[in-house]
Image (spheres, rainbow, N blue to C red):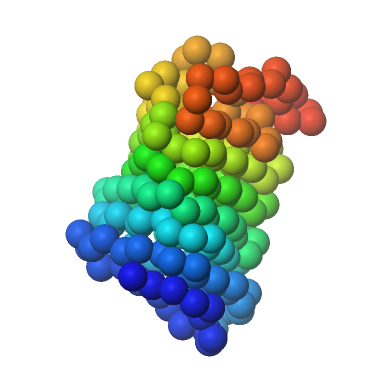
Length: 212
């Protein structure tokens, strides 16, 4: 169990295969080339259990709030909340600028993720690839906001990702949109709740573009 406010510019890592409970954690990273890491760095597949209110902001601008390495899976669960964001060009949860990311599974809690410039809230940043993204009906609420011309959930600008599945419906199959996903996943902020009422807006980016 990890709790409290990070008092210095330290790299916080989760070991491969580990399960960590965030219980009232605050990490406000400093944007400096001296600290080239995310707010939380997963060193492989990991599980984060949310308890109480948690805030994680990345350090150097190229990195995400929470980094999920390529080929690994981060699972987020629990009853607490998480606010995750980049300090510049990374995703809120996922990858960084020209830094690939792995799979992201959210099964519980209240998660708010904001992408940096041209980066997805949950998924990839600019010029990078990513894995699958799965959000189940067990979540209380997930709110994702993408940066300019980036998807809220999925891919950043000039990037790609794997399958995006939300509450059992596939909106992107890794190569093409499904079930209105071109509009849905581009909506920022995109709000997903655990019940059956999910508001799907019909607006895209300001210039009419989408970002896969």
